[in-house]
Length: 69
Image 1 (cartoon, rainbow, N blue to C red):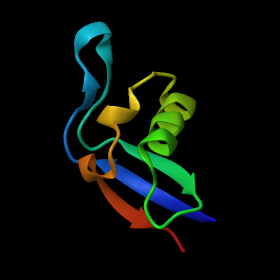
Image 2 (image 1 turned 60 degrees about the horizontal axis):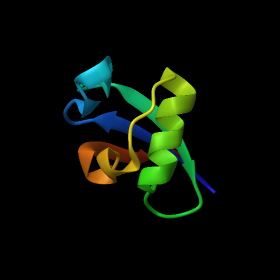
Image 3 (image 1 turned 90 degrees about the vertical axis):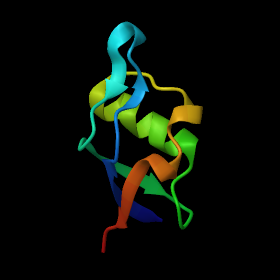
């Protein structure tokens, strides 16, 4: 199991309904794989910020991914 720190490279999500996190926002994700999945990232955003962002908007390519030690 790994813990990741993800920093948004750009605004992630949709402007409609204000369901987005801004560029620079930081989230923590726990994953069993070498790269967090969109589902894991989406769930972490929901848990930490209380907003729902579709998994399709939550690819790891939208974030700077750092594995914590």
